[in-house]
Image (cartoon, rainbow, N blue to C red):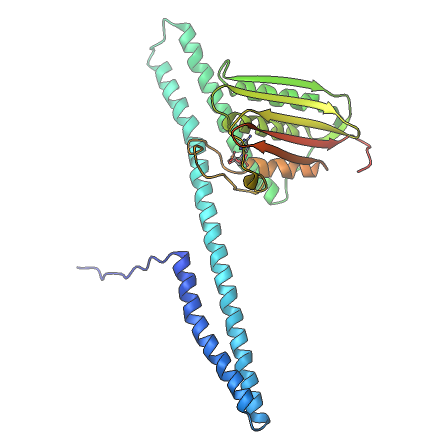
Length: 309
Ligand code: ADP
């Protein structure tokens, strides 16, 4: 039996808005004119009341149409964000997974049974890729917890050295040997009220971004210094940089800069949003300065414990 053909309307958001505007705007304009004419030509109070009622009705209709347009646009934007986010997360998980499968299969095939050095390289790659997987999954889970307001921080009073050291160690575990010229210069004695795991995640995110948004000859500098009433953590890279118009958006959740030559760079657009949220919860600030084609510098300031805010 033949199925009846369904009429499928594939309308874009713009056409929906145009349709709504045309379908509502014209009648609204007409009834406004009618209302005004009715008031002008009114001979008695009945005529004035009719005119005012028509105008009230028109205003209500126009208001409802405006709300409908705004809600439709918002819903479409959310759907697009959700679709992009899912695609990005899938891509971010699939890339390391494919590498892990490939290297595990190579090990299984016994190809390197007589070459322990190559086998060790295979295992190292598998471990590196699992680190990237772990970082992505943690980021999604942290974002979910923070969006629901259930991200607990375990605060301690100490210098931030240990948190920095842990972040650097994890970062190194994600890199091939000699892939990055990383310089780490930690010179701090101030006590800071902080959650070492959260702070480590923030620093790791800045380091992985510095890695991702830098071409060959990657040079990354991490420094920690005591300033008057705060500790300054600086991550500087020699990467692709940011245009001035882009810097003010990069801390927004799900914001990713669309390709010019960035198309191959993975990411889910949550790292800096999480970083800002966590730094705020430490009563700190995070700032960025950048020059396109020259590099980017992120600076986090965390107040010294006991300092006047
Ligand atoms: P993503 O997962 O996309 O890296 P982030 O929130 O960490 O998400 O960063 C948001 C955007 O800011 C990135 O997509 C990238 O375009 C830009 N960005 C972040 N860090 C750097 C950097 N060090 N150099 C240049 N661009 C950067």
